[in-house]
Figure 1 (tube, rainbow, N blue to C red):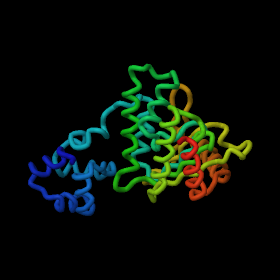
Figure 2 (tube, rainbow, N blue to C red):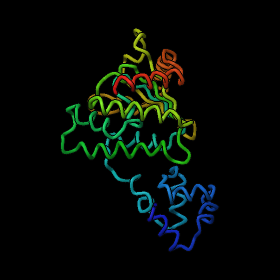
Figure 3 (cartoon, rainbow, N blue to C red):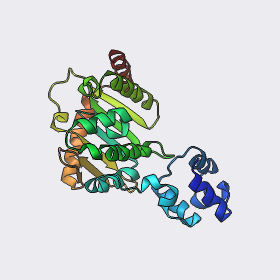
Figure 4 (cartoon, helix red, strand yellow):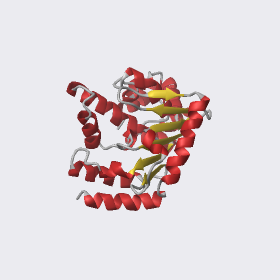
Amino acid sequence: MNDALRVALHETGLTTEALAERVGVDPKTVGRWLSEGRIPHGRHRVSAAEVLRRDVSDIWPDTSRRREPVWFRPWQEIEREAVSLRSFEPLVLPGLLQTEAYARAVLDGGGLIPRADVERHLAARLARQGVLRRDDPPQFTAVIDEGVLRRPVGGRETMREQVRALVDACAEPHIRVHVVPSTVGVYAGLNGPFVIATCPDHRVAGYLDNQLQGQVASDPDDIAAMMTAWENVRGEALSHRQSVDLLREVAQTWS
């Protein structure tokens, strides 16, 4: 239950139906914001907060806590508003699909984050995953290298839980996972991970990760190069259905 939203409705004398009408959503959607703790799309959060005469952070605090590194914030804002996200990862699973145990193992095992800061980074990563659980989530397509599924990040139990979680995620209509099989030789994915986001106004932005920090790309030539790389890695990958079958097989190997 989102108690902050419930209190705001009570104090303004608004019903869920009235709030829904003024924000421009279905009353059942507001009901889900209340009872299921769903996080609305950014524009709906702003509209609802204005109607209720509250700050957005008062009703949905997890969306405004600054737990992520400063350099990551520009991309996080793009990620939150995107209508589609296309992600390629050759080494680890995309952060939006990581379980808590897997994410902790990745953050703690890399050696770049001080132990004292791991939990803060973990909380930020898990909070980001709310973008895939909101009422109007982006279409999320992930291409991963098969080696990611075979690497024992966090141990056998963590991997078993993680791969099973991937299978469950693939049941969602807005999530598609494609695996590049280990039989594929040289392909564009060997040059590193990247994400391509399409915004509501049709602008396209890219994100490149490295050992120190990430980089947001918006130059047309850079975007064109990333789109070419995406077509290459997607073309080498299995279909979604074939990939899910492979995920189930891999989950058994971690049992």
